Length: 443
Ligand SMILES: Nc1nc2c(ncn2[C@@H]2O[C@H](COP(=O)(O)OP(=O)(O)O)[C@@H](O)[C@H]2O)c(=O)[nH]1
Ligand SMILES: [Mg+2]
Image 1 (spheres, rainbow, N blue to C red):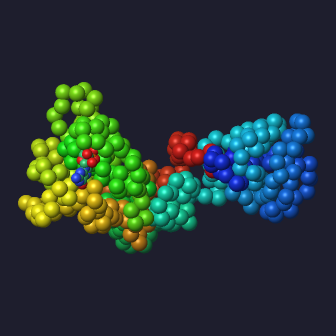
Image 2 (cartoon, rainbow, N blue to C red):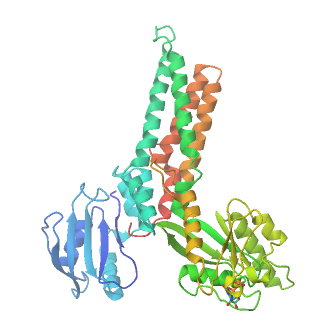
Image 3 (cartoon, rainbow, N blue to C red):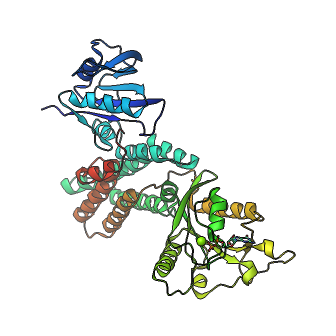
């Protein structure tokens, strides 16, 4: 039985000039013929067509059609792409016309890319990079995703795996032909290779999570007592009124998040409820959430009201660490005052006049860059990869300590399998569904 032919809108659902609808599978060309009446197509040549409903013959739209015959297509199957006018009704009518054609069904999220992976067009790290590129909001995220799409990570992990398999082959030769005269020093050289691989993997793992943070965004929480101007600062940095500002203490009760682009790096900036003891049940839940976000945040902006004495309460004191930037707000109320702080560098600002904001932004951008800026090295970008690499490293360590070649060989096989899981060479069935579920439909 041949696999179903799938179709989906590849572009977003917002109204746009053009929408692209993709069809992939053995019936793709039949579908194109059913919609256009035209039988012969030049591969990859944009052709103007009149799309009609196969059921009623009624014209749906004037469109551009492209045919990508297998195997020179994204999925490796016959693919057609229709560029229709981007209105909702045009898209809906085209999709329902496709649904009427036998053996066609709507695609699931990531199904096109899954087929591309299954056809060997991409390895799993490259497939994941497609999702990252689609999700990339900032320049650095785009660059990281593109490097991964171009195979940088896949080559690194496959390269390690191949070295490991080569070392394993030496050991297996020793097991299978114990009486043969294997080159002297073989066991020692295999041991050295394992050490050097384990060292490279350990260095790759010790990247302080920069690649993963770049993918997900650096989380920055604004924390402080009520009325210190946290919501005002968030609005100022975000450039819009995302949070309610009021002179009533206890106004912000939930966590409000905005996405920002700081020098190409993605940041989620969170405004939180002011920290204070309160009898109000909703407000105290807000305080609990504020503390939780503060502890989990990559960076904290601890904001105090300079005109109110700028004292740290016990909760704030406990949050102040190397990931904190201390900020003194409302300096406009204290003209002529100088701000000296004991032990900490504090940034004096006014969320009302904008004084000091440029300097604060500079400090924040630097702190974000220290946690997420890409280095020249290929970066670890996903927890899935990290876990497999940890498994690999643990197996390599066991191999080094194993009492006998057979046991060492088994651990090396496990280590190689852990690496193979990352690029999708082995043991992948259980991870595929999870990976491709995270995609958009149409990709
Ligand atoms: N004078 C002055 N007032 C400010 C400044 N920042 C905030 N405020 C005022 O302080 C009050 C509390 O601000 P808000 O942003 O709601 O504080 P939050 O409770 O920490 O979120 C509001 O009346 C703001 O207008 C500032 O830099 N200078
Ligand atoms: Mg507030």
